[in-house]
Image 1 (cartoon, one colour):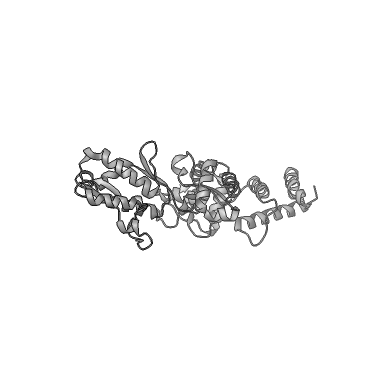
Image 2 (cartoon, rainbow, N blue to C red):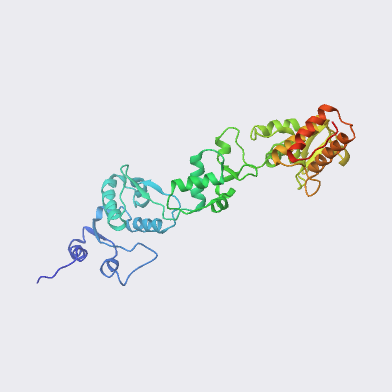
Length: 358
């Protein structure tokens, strides 16, 4: 009568005559009336399959397809894969492994026709990532390829180089460089590394000088001499030096560190033997030679490109300001030797400050 039947309807007709030996796999309503049936709690079938009962009695094809549906609809943050046959074992009913080849053949057809998924050359089923890549993942990829602690601007440029269509900027990248995302700051200069590098790279440690010193002292029962502390810190921050480390710790306003006799330093949260007495405010100020103070001044100018201020700064800078003012006064009254006058004036001339009388 020139009537055209769909292959699915023909499959159903054939099943009626061979149902004693074959199982109909699939949901008839899903296939023949797709506009009326659409379940959210299971797989909605596109086709019907006739499977020999010797196979269908040994394998749960419904659970197999529902599990695939659940996995594919779930949020997949990272692509992952299973060996296909190993995955199928989860749905065996009687563990009759000898019919694995037949089950795998039918299951692969369902996998192809229902989900559009194909096995790779190693017979793995791959569940590809279905979520958008987040900002921190771009930064992580870029920093990992840079392979060393890097400035935010360098990380941004690397991201732009790798992903031409991805719009970002330094502010967006810096906001994503959080510890919970696997990043760690290096000092206070907007340089970042990967937390995992602490276990992979020799002499790498994130954080500030204070956090490194805190970690070092926290493990010890007794306070340590500043020289020992500096030796430890220099392993991770080779560009610093002992005096700078000491000044850094003294400038801490949290009360984390305590300064003891014989230039030893400890943590306020620890209780030490009475042998280590905390310095009072007078003892705390270490008397330095003229040469040491001059070196402090030149180091300060080198780092800040200015002379010390007398207010709105830390105590060490104020002491340095008072010292060089005292030296200026000594030059004016002729109470400083010729060599020291020259050294000091060479510094002061950079800022058009002249102290004559030499």
